Image 1 (cartoon, rainbow, N blue to C red):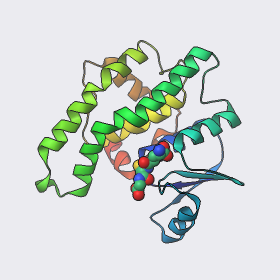
Image 2 (image 1 turned 45 degrees about the vertical axis):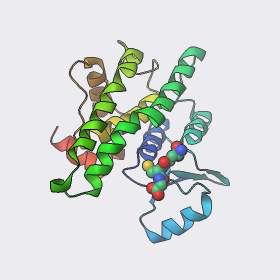
Image 3 (image 1 turned 180 degrees about the vertical axis):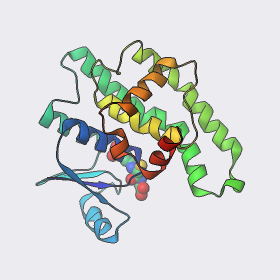
Image 4 (image 1 turned 90 degrees about the vertical axis):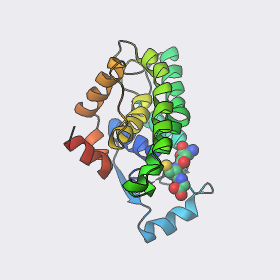
Length: 208
Ligand SMILES: N[C@@H](CCC(=O)N[C@@H](CS)C(=O)NCC(=O)O)C(=O)O
């Protein structure tokens, strides 16, 4: 059984939970806010980050490598053709390294401070940055149902980011109708979105 050292709201962790669900692999999550899990997790990672995956003797402490490992085991996270595989990997990288930069400002500000002390400029700056990073994704998606043909690792990575965005009040603008439709498809489809979502997203889904 695969073990995932996890923090519910970490977008890298949620991306991997979504991928595990899609691959149909059995797994268990170990939240590192539990001191027992935290102690075990610390012995496994030189980076000091979550997620960390343990599959028998194999320990992986980078989420991108976890997705490649799950693809090797299941062949369900990348499309068959070469160009689409490159596209799925590139968009996963974009999700990890670009889409998060604006959202991080919003999430950290809202999570770490009482509402009456929120730095509204920081929140607005983060929201603007998120919006500026969307056209590349809207072009990449085009008219397709998913980012690289079939549902792939790119959809796992981006679903986690967009779910957290929604929960923290950052909406996808109406002009990106294809991104909004994709998000609905991911939430309502059989992709494990609700089952793997952190509590803050579960709350948001109730009011959506
Ligand atoms: N490159 C890492 C990044 C993971 C990462 O930055 N995780 C954050 C949580 S979202 C983390 O563990 N930060 C340190 C901490 O929370 O103590 C990966 O893809 O696995």
